[in-house]
Amino acid sequence: MWRNWRHITKLDPDRKIPDEDLKTVATSGTDALLIGGTRGVTREKVVDLLERLKRFDVVKIQEPSNPANVVFEDIDYLFIPSILNSADPKWIVGLHAEWVRGLTLKHGSLPWDKIQGEAYIVLNPKSAVGIETKAKTDLSIEEACAYATCADRYMHFPIVYIEYSGTYGNPELVRAVRQSLSGSHLFYGGGIDSKEKAREMAKYSTIVVGNILYDDIEKFKQTLSYE
Image (cartoon, rainbow, N blue to C red; front, side, top):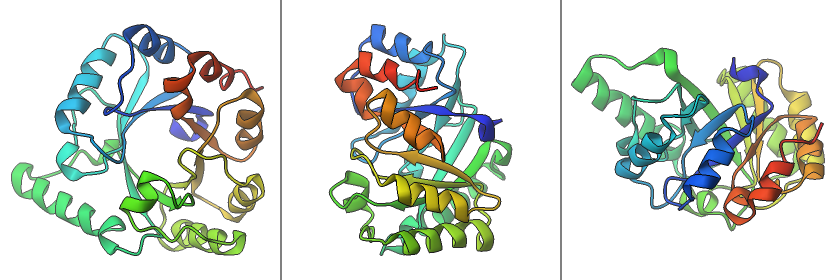
């Protein structure tokens, strides 16, 4: 089902959002709500946000940055990010292996039907995710395509995620990455705060919109009416 999505809204459990704005987002027509953030996220904050979202009939995904924050209840999917261009292997597979080992020992198995892997390519050096994961962000278009091709053809990730995190990225890079993929589905996130930007990146990917909903809910609505 997620391969048909056009618009995803990202909610950060560490950021405050009024009930009225949360209702606007949840009933906006966005295809899914992606719950996750890089810093300041705790399991308690995730549970609290999910509790507030219970009454809304919209797909809910958790994207955990730390295995300790994973919640299996009240979600439809777990999208697990691997930062392919990180200089620290724990962000590629290390934390993931610890998580799988710990949960297997505790519960015997994981709900694999809910789990999808995301191959992140982080391209904003000033972003929290770029700093936290020590990502090599100064990639050329050819280098970004090479990472994407490895994720697609070699590692068989279902999702490749181009992440500019707070800044608007290079549409030519996103287009080239899209053309390099044969099986993986492309997500794009970063700086989408208008109908025009949403339209441009939606030509090549499923767009993920986040920061603007905390700054200007009216501009957030525009990102849903780009067609």
